Structure formats: C-alpha cells, structure tokens
Image 1 (cartoon, rainbow, N blue to C red):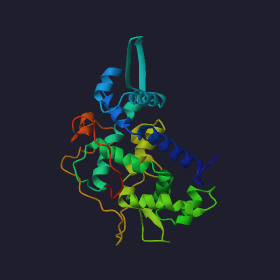
Image 2 (cartoon, one colour; image 1 turned 45 degrees about the vertical axis):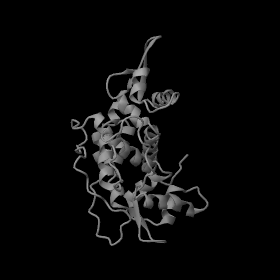
Image 3 (cartoon, helix red, strand yellow; image 1 turned 90 degrees about the horizontal axis):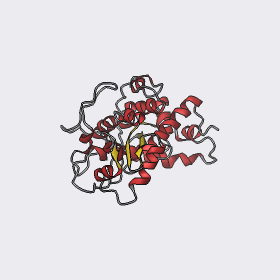
Image 4 (tube, rainbow, N blue to C red; image 1 turned 180 degrees about the horizontal axis):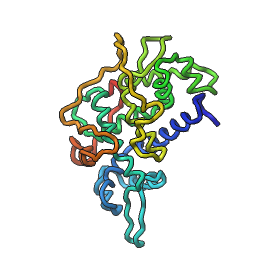
Length: 281
C-alpha cells in the first residue's frame, strides 16, 4: 500500500534509501564496518578494535549487520569463526568520504576538531529524521512548495495536514531546508541541495546498481541549477579545512584510507557524538 502520494517508482526509491540509512545509522555500526574493512577478523580481534563497546554490545550489533547483509560470518571450525565485509558492504564504503566532504562544507563548525567518523554519524542522524527523505525528494523535484501541498504528498492519509510542520521545522533547524517565514513556501537550502551526490549514490547502492549510476538519478542526478540570490538564509556554509580528505569522482580509485575516518580521534573510548543539526552544536 502506498504511504505517500508520490509515483510508485519514487516511493520505492525513497523506501530503499530509508532502509539503507536504517542499516548504517544506528550507533557504532559505521565504526564496526570500518574496523572490518581489512581481512576478516575473529570476534576477539574485532572486539579489540572497538574496545569502547561494553561486554555484550558487540554481538547484537554484529548480528544486525549480518542480518542486513553487510557482514558475513564464516565458521571455519567450531572454534574458528571470522567476520568480514560482504560485497555489499564493500560497495558502500565509497559513500562515506562523500558524506565527510558534505559535512565539512555544510555543517556548522564544532568547537573542537572532529574525526571524520563523527562527521559521518552526525550527517546520518540528519538524514534519518522522520519523513526527512520524502520531504527532501519533494523539495528537490518541485523546488518550492507550501506546507499544505507538501503534507498532501508526504502524508496523504493524515487527517491533520499541519502534522507536516514538526518534521519541516526540524529540517529547517538542521539547515537542510529554508523558508521566508510562517505561511511561506519551503525549498531546499544550499546544504540540502548539495546532498545530491550523497543521496543519489545511496539510491544507486540501495538498488544494487553501480555507484556511477548516481549521475543519472531522476531527481538527484540532474544538473543543479544555480540558486537565485536570496536575502534570507537559515544556515551558512563554512569553508572546508585544509585536512579535509580530497573528494573523488564515483568509480575512481580511493585517495583515502579507512583509518583516515578516525583522524583526530582520542585514544580509548570515543566521545559520543553531540546533538546534530545545520547549526550543529
């Protein structure tokens, strides 16, 4: 049964991306995937790499990643079991530096140097807000839309169309959408529009397509028109730091190493990510 008033292909696309985000966004999942980016590891070897996880936390995380098809458990003997990436997880890794590049450009600078892994976790939190994916898709395809019309598209079965405003206000607070004020239409902010490569690539990955198909995505793959000058901006971009991992084209050889995502990380248990948002911290 349709849950939005969007075309079936678009709704299926959003559902796949939402499911993909749900696989990797839960706390520590990306860190575990990165820890497994080399040869397969025994449980004890992996536990040593993610030593901040308390006893009993790693096993259910591994089980959920195995169930999601991202981690493979191989039983060599009864006493020799290893965990490693599936091909699907390996295909996902190139999306991570794209998220870092977007975060460094568009999330507000924190009051301390952040490791790239925290940039990824903060960004994923924004993208998994309730109704965020559907709203972003509509704003990108329609450029400008009122709250009432947006509610009819995103929440067609909701009796009170004003229920669209809490997720809309959250997207504005996160810096992904803009509006001139109450009763005025909504549109993507510069940061929201710049998510195109990330969401297009996630869409291709979720559909099992080569990542270079992101350039042909019907919504996010279209050339981005230059935004008209506006006197109102709800979120300001910031310049990327000199240490930012270089962005790369989809399909090219990676210029970064998975360990780079932990740059600036302190020894021992990592600091938990602070609340995120366009004005992030």
